[in-house]
Image (cartoon, rainbow, N blue to C red):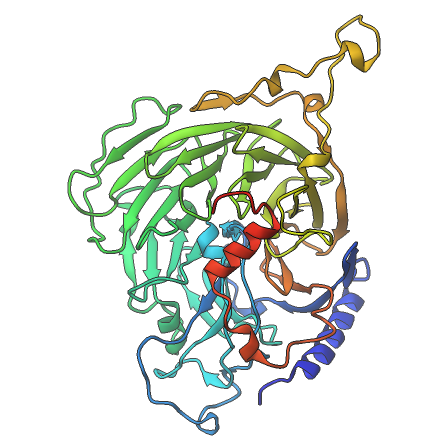
Length: 548
């Protein structure tokens, strides 16, 4: 039986109360100037199905929206479909992601966001959820929004709009662990889900096809880098290239990133030239028209996260060496970048308009990079441990925003290994650049000057050292709450909610102010907003003067 919006609210309230009783130090809500975000429900994995290698991986979540099934299938009445193993869903939800992503993120999220997780893998679009469809039925339409997440040696799939805590599908990989994944809502040939393993192996599959099958193994998968034939180091991040017509990238722990095309053979020639200088960026192309079609050597040490700008023009990477690097993807050119204050950078995310990039890492700070200035323009202090996930909230708009582009405000979030969620507001017109006073001079602002950090944009291709922390404006956190008992690995913003993800595979869905009290009753009114419309809306809210 399909749950009603009213019963969803009652169930979630009861669930939230129960969870709070188990963890008395955790709140089931947090307040912001626009209202209260409430813990609606949680998602996790069946505890009895974990592999012994569970502790070796960090859970990432990919938001995956399945549209109408393209092939016309014979309709079945709901009475012929079982309920116990079915997808029990609430009313349709307008959903989408931030990282961008994504991803993600975290894939993306790491990413997305998150994150990165990549931007495209974190963005869903609107659709009604299927109700009472049996997973394992070949006629299963699968339409709806799903959470794809990895724990131990398995990938789990949950219906986001269902109150069920346990997933509806699990896929097990035996002696290897999935560590990153990405989804393409606009995939043309059905293969829309990418999965990267700690062995370096990569799979592309159809998410809908996995949901149709009863078993716990991948079906109809395309296998890349089989048994480490191209690269034996673990996959660290994976993303579809926006507008790339089936092109995707895979980052590895040895600092190399490979470009694949779905339309080409998966067993390529692994003989790329030897990398002469591990510290220098280089690109090599395959000699034959097989996968992988190119190898990018990004850095010395692991690539920790990759995120594409929404239009796919730019690609940001962060790595073990502590550097953010921004590339012109099509032209294979390093545009800009810079170093953390300390240690590795772990996550990155783009604003929807492509103007700003967030980074977080082992220095416990959140940094805001400007693409126009090609430098850090703000930083946020508030986490007590490593920052593991960042994302812009592309659905939020300032209460007094008129879409004119004046006094633009961005909302973004960060999560860390300190188990806390922080929300921030970035209002560029309100940032005050600190003034440095000359040594021995009069302690007045009139004798001071801005540091060299603000002397115009640096030349293209320059990697900047970390600026003095005194030279960059400091942001104040809007919200800071301990929301999990475990370290966090990512967050995703949707139209209705904020999703927070722990390293151990527990996901919490926090409903935005207004959504928890009044669930939409007419799903049809929500079905007209596409990704393009979402982009234009976001552009209007956070910088309509920017050319989309």
